[in-house]
Structures are given as structure tokens and as C-alpha cells.
Image (cartoon, rainbow, N blue to C red; front, side, top):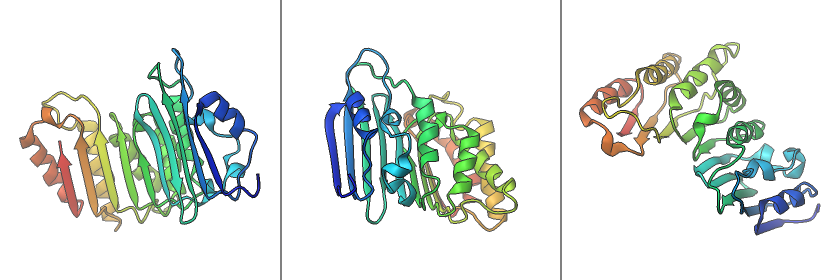
Length: 256
């Protein structure tokens, strides 16, 4: 389908969508919309199960995207959205009965690796960030030198991600990874104890990474940390953490 400019595949079963995509290539398509559903009592594959094995030959968006959104915003919904100046891809899977995907961990690892050849400036993870390993985050950070904005949602994840951000540079042969990274937004969906606004280990990992980058002239301009369960937090403790963060970041916003 070398001349196709728009691919619209919606309201079809995911299994059928996967079969169709496995047999086509759309190198000239500037708009790709694939929105499918699974209707089963058992966990079903996510968007990861929809994608052709060789995504590079399916569409150039995987090597040209400047903005990428991936993740599981809800337990029953998975999405991958990528766009460049000329192309846009949107792929989603909705579960109609069993609100569980069968490949969440594998999908999150794969989604992030898919775009490491692209000049991504904005990366958004809309849920399940905790399923991405530290090794994969290091690979992503080393592979995205143009990254400026990072927006993440998940549970118990931010400490390991910032540890990976520091490690990627420390073991990168002296090259600072993501030198243009300026804005980070974190949404925490964890159910922490109300007396523990930030668990010590991940907060120390966050501070260490921020301090390390500041000392080398690559500090963040803006850091935003939110909690989905902010009503449980103790505001006095938030002030203490805000002081520590503001000594390292130009603009800090805490909604805990």
C-alpha cells in the first residue's frame, strides 16, 4: 500500500487488527489511526500485540517522531501516539470485559525501545511507568539526545528512573545524556502511608540525580510532582521536600 496517505482502522477486534497490520506497509501514510477492542473474559494483548514485528518498515513515524505518548492510562486501555511535523500515528486497545492486559510489562519495555532512533523531544508515559526496567531507561536516555520534556505516570517508579538518568551519563563515556532535558513532570499513583510523603530511598535517588546534573551544568528548569492521592499527604512535610528540590531546580511544583 505504497500510495496510501491515511489509514483508518477503528471499532474492530484487536485480533483482526493485528492480522491486517501484519500484512501491510504504509510508508507514505501521514495519518494512521488504529483503535481496536478486545471482548473476552481473559486478559488480552495490548497495542504491543497489534504492532507488526518490523515497525520500521511499517511506517517512518518510528524513526521521525518528535513527540511520543505511550502507556496504560487505565487498566482497560492502552495507547501509543506518535507525531512529527508531517506524520501522526494513534493506536489504542480497549478491553470491554476483563480489565487486564496480558502483556503490560513486555509492552512498556517494547514501547520505549521502539522510538530510540527518532529525534524525540517530548516523551509521555500515561501509566505503568513502574514496569520499565532501569536498564531500559538507561538505554532510552542514551538514545534520545534531543529529549527536552519528560512526563511520567506510575507507581513507585521515580527513584529508579532518576537513578537510571544519572547512571546513563556516568557510564556513557563522559557524554551527558539528554543534555537538553529541561522539564520533568511526575504523577505518582502510589498508596503511601500518610506519614511518608516521599519514601527516603527514591527521594534520595531523585536528589542525587538532580544534584549531579546541576554540578555539570545541566540542571532542570522545571520539576512538577503530583500525587493522585494528595488528600492523604501531610502538607508540612511537603514544604521540607520542596526546599531541598528548589535548591536544585529553578521552578518546583509539588501537589502532594
